Image (cartoon, rainbow, N blue to C red; front, top):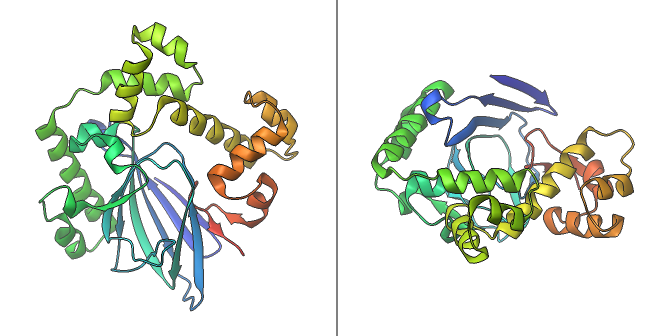
Amino acid sequence: MMTRKKHKMVYQEFRPIKVLEDYIQYFWVLEDHADNSNKTFFRVIPDGVPALIYQEGPSLFYDHRSLPLPQLYIYGQSSRYIENSITGYFRIIGVYLHPTALKTIFNIDAFELSNQNIPLSDIVSDNILERLLNANTIGKKIAILSDFLLKRIRSVKINGEKAAFATTLLQKGASLKDIQSEMALSERSLERLVKQYVGMSPKMFSRIARFQSGLDILRKSDSHNLTTLAYAKAYFDQSHYIREFKEFTGTTPKIFLLRSDETLANFPKWNL
């Protein structure tokens, strides 16, 4: 478990049980104890990761249309940044899945959930929300989520190894042609495989992986030399990198560093 406290928000991270490690990256908990009467804004940054989200209370976070997000929902792969807002105290529990896990856990083609927040009750009949509401500790809630996901995996029984291998190669920066050659797949077959299991084209997933790799360097670097970073990540030039950065975050690297508070990576509180 890892705990980090910053600007009144508390973040905790929990490893999944071993049998779930091929499907779940980790569980996390984010909470803000500030009794804010003002609206607080967050941005969801594309990271190639689908998730299951539980909010400890109805109508906590709202989307960019001012509609409340479901209390328990799945969000699919995102190819663009999303704005959320909230007023006052909150606690949310997230389950960060592996990129191909929507298909292997729920037996749904991942592209059907892309850029959407779908109530879990629309996908499965299991009344897990009631059990989560009645659990009185974070540990019990994570155990309920783990048990639910394990039952899903055992009932679905889909082998996603081929898709997971392709996804890993994309995350490592392999070219599409090299992946096709390595896996003996045609361009169309690779496209179909990744879209079905991940929810977007191989090219888009590769772009997001490259952007995330550059963002990680930007977070850790003191110099923030964008030209050097751009060439290191195989962008044409600095302006190409900035355009890509703005597409995925809605702003420039400089303003992102000034205004974002990333207690939880890729879900920064946005300081206006």
